[in-house]
Length: 288
Ligand code: ATR
Image (cartoon, rainbow, N blue to C red; front, top):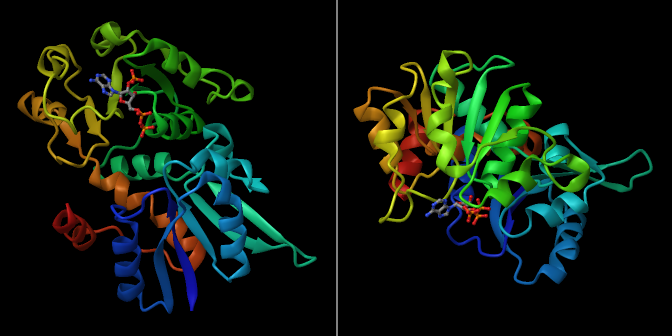
């Protein structure tokens, strides 16, 4: 039996077990995917090494351990190195039998895959505006930069956006331009020269009712072919996506990224690539 799971401070609300167990059954894989709560940061590294000892193939990592997981990896994918955080661990054995831990950051790749599923294929040099500077914004920005995209980052707290785009060696992702929070709507049209191709809402706005930015006002000046993506999936139709639909823009909700980010881990641990389809989506919709 191949084993994997999700490690985090609190994993009771994680949809990962539901998703992976569904794929295991669907593909007939002899495996299990379990919730792995880790209560104390001091015990995280021991928990990771213990899982490897116990024969686990690897694990997903969620809040608050993504940075700690990155620090203990022997190898990192380029996007994980850039993001300084990992959500996917794979345990392998070197030639001498010693444990090697590989870390990957699949949130950004998952986000790009969810765009592609909506027929949106970004070419290097195209402009993307990311709203937010938390963990999700960071992983997405890292992946966009790896793809050679032109990234603008805007956040309510300017300093966090500046920290995010700082060189990798100073704890940032090493690229992107900062736009002040009150100035991002003015960037959308790019005066027709550098219009924004995709607007990514990567803050927690939209999860909470109450004060929202004037989304409709901002989108009024957006290019007609701009795609609006929101990473929030509770609710699925966020105030931003509602405004985008009213304006007739193409929208991408957060459920796609949630499903797609799980694919690379499943493939690494269980040896088969699951398909993200309407059935997967319905399964998650039911769980919201
Ligand atoms: P995570 O790491 O899980 O993404 P986080 O670090 O708390 O979570 O980030 C939440 C994001 O939502 C931040 O970009 C935050 O902006 P600040 O850095 O200024 O705090 C953003 N956010 C939350 N509430 C917001 C609001 N009412 N208006 C604008 N941005 C908001």
